[in-house]
Amino acid sequence: VEVTVIQTTAIDITVPTGTTAGEMAAALTTTVCNGEIGCQVVAGAATGRRLAPDNNNRRGLQSSTTFTVTRELDSSSSGSLAPPTVNTTNLAASLGVTSVAAPTVTLQEVSVEINVISEGSPSSAAAQSQAATQTAAFTPSALAAAVPGLSASALTVQAATVIGPPQPP
Image (cartoon, rainbow, N blue to C red; front, side):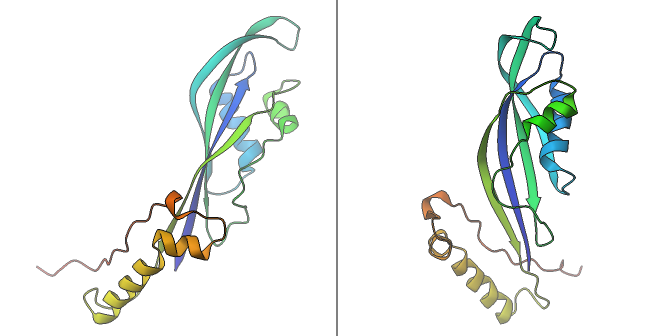
């Protein structure tokens, strides 16, 4: 059985004057992902601009940009399912600025992919029985009953699929 959890989080943060969205994405990758395999940060569109003083007390435009953090967690991962935290002190240091405004962090989605690999013919009674068992176990109501606080209405489940080798010519 292989289980992969994919977590998608939005980080809405003001990009400091003189800093590009690419530089902020790289700094967030360093700060939030911290070298974690399967973690990436992508810059989205700027959502607004405002005048703010820079490091030399000059006024300049700062834009608020939403960054998407995608984390893939599996059995070898040490990360948690909690939304990532942003250490603004470390982020400011990575950017070479004195400070960074606190971001808004919003968990957008958590998806789970479960692969069960069984050897044998996909048309065998054993494979069909296993597919039926998996389909029953992974209905929204069954998952909600198994995980406290999880609502069946918040779940989308794709039915189990039996995949076999290609048919000979």
